Length: 116
Image (cartoon, rainbow, N blue to C red):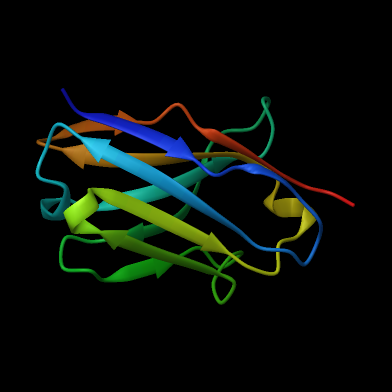
């Protein structure tokens, strides 16, 4: 079955960097658009952060554009989110999401805390 497992979250100081990973399984990884979302706090909804298409095109939200980089390794069925110049407002739980055969699939999330 389709499955996503995120990793790489943690505590980082403002201005620091962190790279998240999303290991995918159960489908042809390179054939579908993949996305990163985050939930800033439990009472807020998930917000879109970045995406990478099946052709490798990328898009970013305005809040992270120029600081975050989304990439993928098709051979490893893994997507990455390199986060640089982190700010307190980047704190949250980060999720990967894929739309596979008209169904949405989400990982369990990995928490990121940006604090001094």
